[in-house]
Image (cartoon, rainbow, N blue to C red; front, side, top):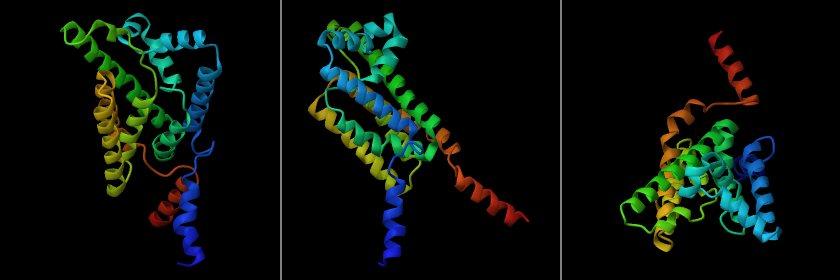
Length: 230
């Protein structure tokens, strides 16, 4: 392989995949926000942090009292005190989805997964408590984080990839869900994680309608079509 072929096949595609503020404003902006809240959670006043996270939690009690605050607030925190894993998950899911579908559609998929999977999982919690299968204290269990949005983004991204990449993306998502079910079979996430990924998959038709060249590529495509028609 010559140096020119190496640049064309490996280096240039690799550089295009690196997130930048121009290509990935949503993914990088969200990561910056999560970095800020993670640092505050680690170094801020513990009582204030606990109070803010408690208000942001999407547990069943909060959803009945102040649903908008909890649904929006829960997506401002990471589950735990380590931010770097979310950098890599956003790099591999949200960022490529945004490059292919645009920032608004990436936000739509992320938000649909976060909100939809939260409501579904907490609905299951309420139903199991009402049926006596689960202790009532689960209604107030802390539930924050962005894993639903990330899994929905992975599911949505799969629909914009070719078959090998699609199989890899879906397989990675199923492996993550299976690992969680085996190592930490929590009722909320056991329902929410697969639901979030399925919501992303369900949005394939909407994402594919928005798929197409943008910016300079759109101009080149328009010029080519004009030449062919003439």
